[in-house]
Length: 212
Image (cartoon, rainbow, N blue to C red; front, top):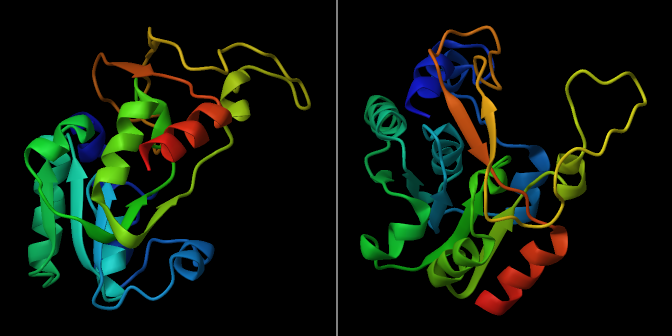
């Protein structure tokens, strides 16, 4: 993620120039579903370099972003300073270890797209989410349906469905050689491997319910 941050800050996928110029990098349905955040305290878990987080700040929230990549957190803090978001905080932490360094609750806990596949323990993640939602607060997640993750997405013909990966949670990670990043497959990031985990929809929902 440190290497990807350097790719993403300059690439078209995240359009950092457009964001600096006043853009909001959130989907309309996210804004509509979460609702008015003016003056509310919002925690963004796995925030990468923070432009979704700072989009909520542009909509009036007092934001805290969390990511385990030192490079991503540095860039997020740089952006917050450059753009005048003096109340925005960015914390460098593994999501599972966050309760060791942050002892607060929030009106909104938010995660953006594509976060669950990097997590080895969905129940542990759900407990962290529940820890930070204040009584009467809200948790919002927008994520791909996990059944889509069970099918091969590369080298398949149009209309072909090739079941290739687990649907249920598994202790050992799926390991892939990295070519560029999801935002720029042609980027040079050196020799990298990515590790991912699958979680069934029932496992995700059950984990969140049991976590409270």
